[in-house]
Structures are given as structure tokens and as C-alpha cells.
Length: 100
Image (cartoon, rainbow, N blue to C red; front, side, top):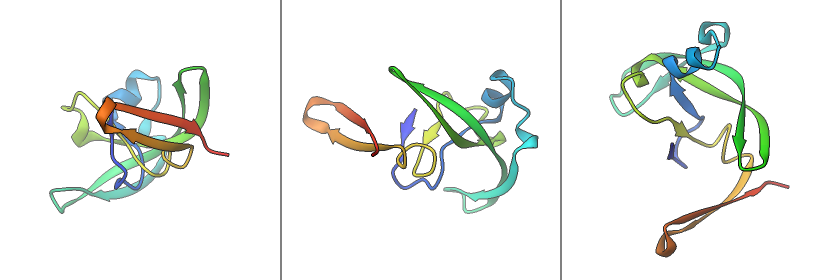
């Protein structure tokens, strides 16, 4: 995963959604404007994420143009809103504390 504090929402490949047993097209249709500046269709679906001992219900977008990427992006809605995040660059660590 890439941690992108500037991303509005967490976004993963469409294929990952299918692999997880989702039909992303049943999610809420939206458009995303990324680095290309061109709007792209994507679908926002409810998901569960597991981080250590925590299982959290959240939502994420699924985007076809990410199918060739070996990673997803965690952003504000769906990740940063669930945790207090501390970057410890000197130790190459990220500390996640569930938000109160």
C-alpha cells in the first residue's frame, strides 16, 4: 500500500475488488481526477480492512486504471479518518493508533 495523505479516499484496483468477491459496479459511481488530469470512473464500496488485531469497516474506491499497479492507495476517507498516524522517518516506521 501507498500511504497518501493527500488522497481524498482509499483506492484499489478493480481487479482486487473482484478478487475479494465484490462487484465494484454495485458501489456508488464517482469520478476521480488523478495525476493525468483526466476524470476516471470508479466505484466506492463498503469493505473491511484488517490491520494487526483490528478489523475495521470502511469504504474504498475501485478503479480500472489501477489494475496494472501492484499496490493500492490509502487516503483520508477510509484510512486516515480511522487512525492517528505518526511517521517516524528516522526509524522507517509508521505508527497507527485507532482514532478516539
